[in-house]
Length: 230
Picture 1 (cartoon, rainbow, N blue to C red):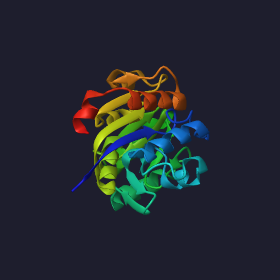
Picture 2: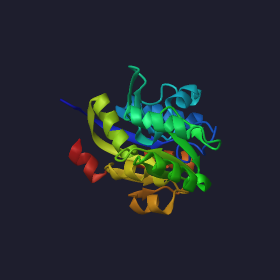
Picture 3: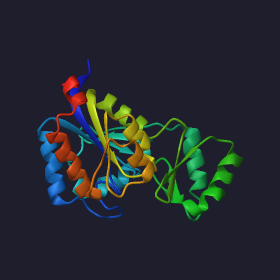
């Protein structure tokens, strides 16, 4: 039987941080740690891969699950359990595409600047495979059909053996499906228009400060759905 919980899923680059190598601020870590101590399950939902997240000291011991590569893989830090939702045909395609000079190879997929989209699309068509191209503010990541951050979140909850009220925070096109499967949807102030459009709440602040704003809201407002579930 699934355990009931309160769940917060949050994007990394452009949401929890400014992006790049920008680190999670100490007071934001403290707030997230406090949420976990209050019984919330925290899930990181990112386009980054496992190898990259493992190198980030600022993310260590912060999340119950990592949804990686925009939903293509899930990792549970406490147990070391790792699931990838791609087959050998997909892996073979990724290896071939990774030979292109402008490609960044991840564990299970690739990313590249959107200016190279036509070239990559043509290569994929030659291989005769179906893929989905997701745009993350000018950086394209490719995924198998049916795989996205929303899918990854559902798989992470299965591995954690929990269900319940889900709040999600994002900033870009690649976060849309994550927000769509949540009970409470939030976007940071500088989020893409489409993400803001589907959000229940748009923070007044950007990045990590916007996340803090949403956390404060979750802890202070009497959200009707929240109290129906718990």
